[in-house]
Amino acid sequence: MSERYDCTDCKDSLYGQKYILKEEHPYCIKCYEGLFSSNCEMCKKLISCTSKDLSFKDRHWHSECFLCNKCSRSIVDRPFATKNDLLMCTDCYCVEYSSKCHACLKTIMPGTKKMEHKGTSWHEQCFICKSCQQPIGTKSFVKKDGNNYCLACYEKQFALQCVHCEKPITTGGVSYHDQPWHKECFVCTGCKMQLAGQRFTSRDDLTYCLECFCNLFAKKCAYCTSPISGLRGSKYISFEDRQWHNDCFNCQKCGVSLVGRGFLTFKDDILCPDCGKDL
Image (cartoon, rainbow, N blue to C red; front, top):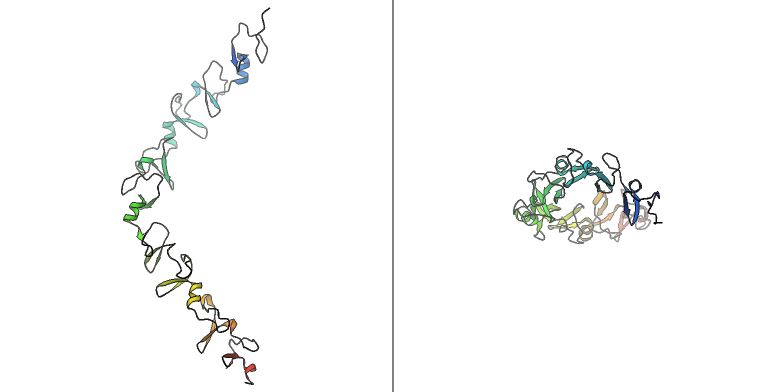
């Protein structure tokens, strides 16, 4: 008696029947399609083992259902693109979604390398310097009056030169006394802190932050010896070539504030009338 040859799943005999081997296991057509065949994305019907199964990103179609979603032309053996999981021939995709090159105004085809800057697109070969006409590619560039310039051409034609380092200013410049500076060059003469966006002053054409200016040039309080800046509304008292902070102008004996009051002097000391009446 001959050995049985049955379907791996339903166990029906396969003698005289069509069957399919999968990983060396035999299956009848019905079991194979139920277990392994996919449904078509387009018509939702089963793709039988006798039909051609076209797959893309884990989805499946009958070959006759593999069509452009817009014009319904077959895209079997033709280039196509997808948008929101919809298949489209490249012609329809370009009409609907592809960018137009800012230079030549032609469509930038899917899969073509393009350059983008602030919402504007170019073909790679169209993204060139306005002056030297050389491709810019991924190199740094400067946009001026709607045109793109490589740094070398921009610096040659338009860039101002920093009065400090004499190098071109391409971005982030500062103007002071009608002269251009790099931000990193416009610094305090004393501490070298950048002054762009900060309060500062100058002396003998040299710029200083307020702290350095006060430390270097402001008069010192006769009591605490700290600089009297007079900045931000701070008040001070001046008497016989000496100055005091308001908070420091006190009787040297009893400590009472002398601001707005009469006072006496004795051997460089400032005294209130009560403390000085016996002197």
